[in-house]
Length: 67
Image (cartoon, rainbow, N blue to C red):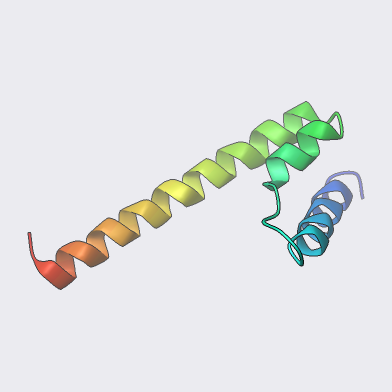
């Protein structure tokens, strides 16, 4: 219960905040709750996901327009 509960709560907070505005990343929420190690791990995962998404976007552009 110790690991998944903060992650689940951060996701829930993101959903509620996302109703009106752009929600903060989970890593920032966890950091603000004084969970630095979990925040670092989530930030690393977010960065990897963003890098993969950027790579996929670039690859799609190459396929579409050549290069």
